[in-house]
Length: 292
Ligand code: GUN
Image (cartoon, rainbow, N blue to C red; front, side, top):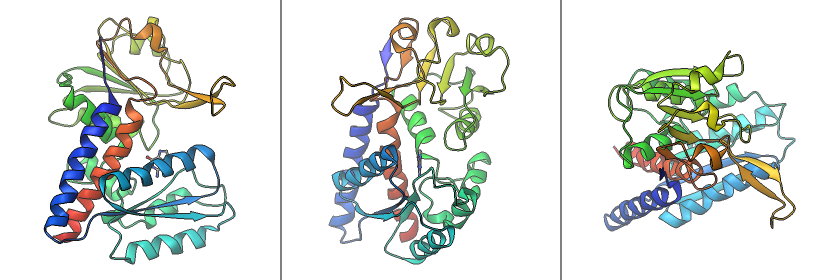
């Protein structure tokens, strides 16, 4: 069994990006600039955004964090997005999700300039992805592809089962694994809350990608020998023995499933750090695109 070490690989990617930034500086050009908008005070979202800003510093990008109160109106947020669309100094930006109830997320995502949409959430980028055109690929699915590639995990002709159909992870992942090339050329089944007999499906999978947010959902009985297991779940579970009062748990019963798996991602230290590395990669791509 091999652990797919997202922490290690994400550090390699960050080192590669740092080297690219040095080349940009040596040429006397502007370094990539990522902006992030966060609305409200959700603890997990604040932590994620802080990690993204820190990662920018680590690789030598410029970053701007825009914090708006939880009472922000949709109109105010749309105005801020339009400002970022028009600001030539910003190469890419993200609007951290979820947004407060008074704001229509679809409207927000449609307002982001697709050329600055480093999250890859705009329908233009999603459509291009589905049509094998060059586009920004959402960071978590992009990170999973990168991890499979760097560990040379065979995907060709394999049966990949994706659990969860979210717009951010499950749905794009199901498209990407079926695309031509490597990693890809997989036969994909997308399962979700209305799927019947899920064990029957998962137990036939060569590769399982689970993005549910349901701690310990995937049990050893649901997995065949030598399956590849990618765990996208990161749920905060209360734990008074931990310094922060919680621990992070994935969707996979790691202790038991890891005994059967050929490759498996840990939580934390698997998919999570890859997501941040690939957001940086998308921002670098955005800079190169805007230069041209
Ligand atoms: N919320 C959970 N994951 C993400 C992500 O990748 N990007 C943004 N913007 N919000 C998120």
